[in-house]
Length: 89
Image (cartoon, rainbow, N blue to C red; front, side, top):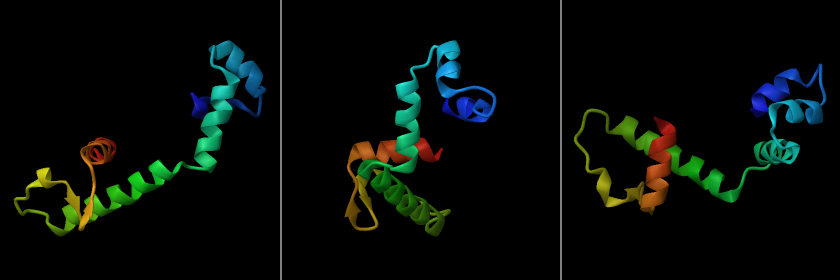
């Protein structure tokens, strides 16, 4: 929704677009703020995901046990592992 509004901001105001789409303009501005200033958790999730991807590339073709919860020597809890696996495809 935010991408759509961004794509049409040159012709309409954000408020007009949000009214037509029944999308709160506060939600739009909150999403834009999160893009510019990511939370500490999203930054840490990106770091963990990069470590997981690097480990996968390094160990390509080897049988691994991913259930032990360690990523490069740093503990990554089950929620972090699940969210990272989900977002990386």
